[in-house]
Image 1: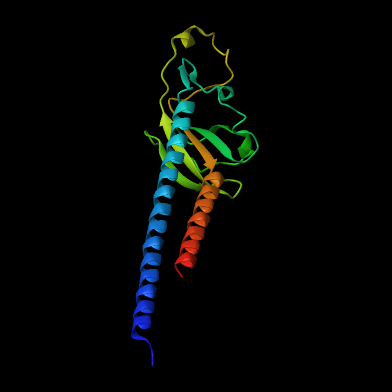
Image 2 (image 1 turned 90 degrees about the vertical axis):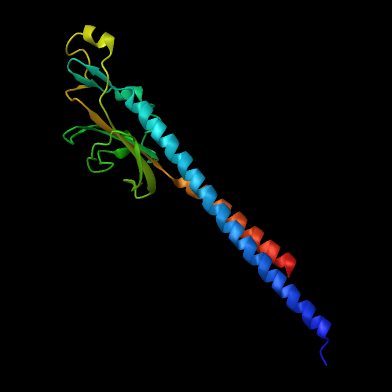
Length: 195
């Protein structure tokens, strides 16, 4: 004959294990999704800030827009394939691109975007990334009117330019993978302790 107390004890224990496992699973999923969203917002914000900073380096001259890509930190955009930029005239023709693009296009000439807009992208190297795009009308620099005509080779005849800056998301995805692994391990350890 079965001991009714033992049977009741086992049912309570199994119920408790299932309940705790369900609650822990929900907490793990919510934690992961919140951290993922926060990392994505921070990544997008940093990329948008970098794009706006780079766009602020453009200056209007009597001959057009002075791009001076040499002002950009070119070590970030070297041929490593992790960061890219491309600049277009208002008619969609490319003015300049980062060495990491190796004469490829980052994206097809984008639509005019008066505010910074960040989107997912498949980079030219086949990896996933994020791209920030902005169209700017550079302000004139007071000293530019004194510059002799033809003295700067980086002056482009245009009223506005569109800048796209993209970055590989590998580090962010790796961090999320580590977090996911840690949460799963915690879930398994807790399940093992309870059983």
